[in-house]
Length: 118
Image 1: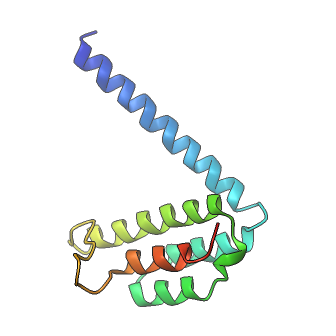
Image 2: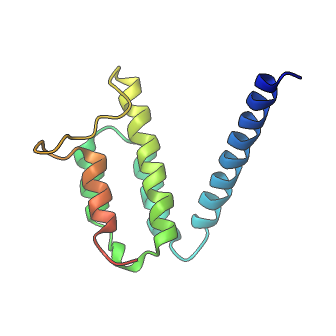
């Protein structure tokens, strides 16, 4: 095996391990203390059609009661869903606002979720 092939194999293995770890973390979040919040977020993401609706849904959650680990899982899932929706509509996967521009949906959501101390 060449060094390049080994590097590709190692990278694929690490990516697979990361996906499995995240899947396990999400599964735990969906049955843990904050399952109601995560279930609502995941339901909203499965039916995602509008950034405004998603932001409003996230604003309706009392994130002060949600621990930092669950917030990170929620942010990851939200980011994945927004990216997927943007790609399906032939937009760039990531389109964060530049300084002076209005914040985009993910940036607003990140601010909402992180406005309370962990």
